[in-house]
Length: 252
Image (cartoon, rainbow, N blue to C red; front, side):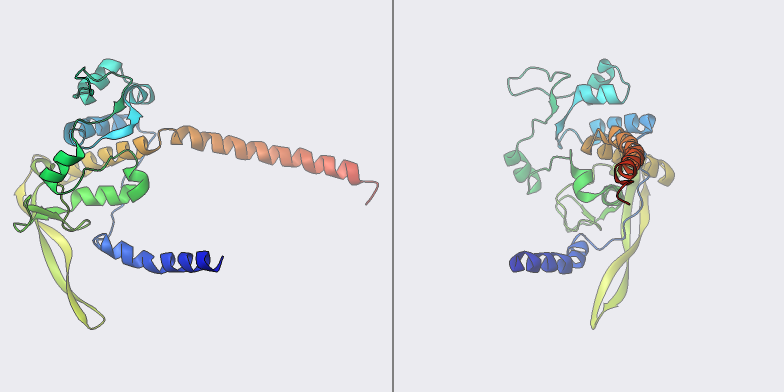
């Protein structure tokens, strides 16, 4: 028991350190609304266009997306299904969202295996994903030509640069105790992308919204069921309390 308590104390003490290790960037609030099916459909399109060629979502099935987002199966095929299974046959609508990229190829190309994104929103949080996708900047010292303020030295290239444009970091020297540290305070646009700043933020909001959805597709039903269960328990408590009074009236 003492060892468990010590581990918990160490974990709590390391939490700020781990937060700083994620890049130290202030996270922005992601505009999440999983009840907005139009946003989720746009996010699915963005995921299919820019993420799914490398990143799998292997705990999710295509036909589940079609059902939940009120889409025809043919729409989902055109939007997301670009792959073939291990036998070389076209991916079926009921298959899991896997990709053909192997870990060996990913490590050779990017220096690391490519993570599955099904549970990324649960593991990292929607705000982290939203801020991360906004925080790529030009860095000629990196193999891809880009770095990220939220995830320093990340191996992933900035696949959305044509939409966002190019930006450079602006640094400010701050003191951490007796140590001077150069921190990124904001970014300066050096080349426009296809989208304006507002359009890009909406695009990222939709993409992040979709990733929150695939991380827990049943969350809408879960929340709705939660309120019903709470209401049932309140009503049940009333009956239980009345029954208790009836049983104990002669005792009290």
